[in-house]
Length: 390
Ligand SMILES: Cc1cc2nc3c(=O)[nH]c(=O)nc-3n(C[C@H](O)[C@H](O)[C@H](O)COP(=O)(O)O)c2cc1C
Ligand SMILES: [Fe+2]
Ligand SMILES: [Fe+2]
Image 1 (tube, rainbow, N blue to C red):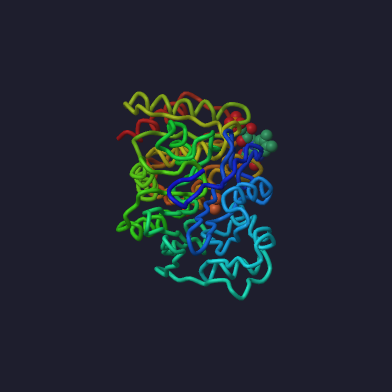
Image 2 (cartoon, helix red, strand yellow):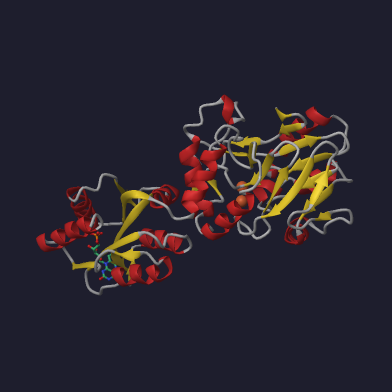
């Protein structure tokens, strides 16, 4: 698939993996995008694919360049969904020179054996000519690994952005946004952001600043569609999420064994509805997939977290969410806390402890009840719901 001139798409679709990174549910699969620039003087491959797909991958490459060797393998990101075929590419093309920054090459040594003498170590702003195409490298650390960089083709205005601006969802025949209905990919870009990049708001903002002056005509990320028409929307999605901008709405996240916490969650929702909150989402954390819960939290301004005390702490599925949130940029959110116990109160304390890292703004004092929930407890939960709208 030719994208523009000598730039080709050689990525693959993974419709088998159940959870990305072993964690994030993949109902529509995922693509590993790789790009081949078959220029007049040199051939460059930009990132590779998961090693499990190498057979299909090398066929796609050879269908374009035949017996011509690959001169450069540009490694924008070392996570093995993209670097996985690096060792095999080196076997097929012994003369290939890796192109990465100092941190990349150090990781190459660790993951795939010592780098080769001809490998190129590039710094921020360095460039490489392939003949017609001139590539420039921009280091974008912690977006989302320390070695992450982006490669910009100045000749065509194409940004090879790595994971940034990528999304879950395999590619179903189409590659470029100009030719397809992109509707289903946008929520998947947001879910990808919340799951994978959610901790790195500040580095994402820095990266966006760095790219701000580039003339972007095409964004080729490592997952999902190639952006041409909708570059602005992709950048805006990253700008909003990395700045912690949310829409007004309440996400109620709870766990419950015997229904008491669940009744309180329902009452929080009723209170918020009564106060005029229009967007209310409830996640039973024993049922909802974590990446969808995180997605809603990144979208909406308010979060209520509730759970029972369990073995001296908070119910495990609730603690799991709190651990995930403690490692993400969510400090602008409003937070409500509710938790019950039967003989020794720990749930509320535990949620509050996690909030020392989450740093959300408490809308009112936590609500706590002992054993069954009574009319007073339910009234307090409704008041908590109303407080989100105040
Ligand atoms: C396995 C298990 C462990 C529990 N551990 C504690 C505890 O450490 N301290 C406590 O006060 N209550 C504990 N409880 C009691 C729960 O807080 C109680 O069952 C409560 O009703 C659960 O809320 P729910 O109805 O929303 O599930 C435990 C219950 C279970 C089933
Ligand atoms: Fe990655
Ligand atoms: Fe990736």
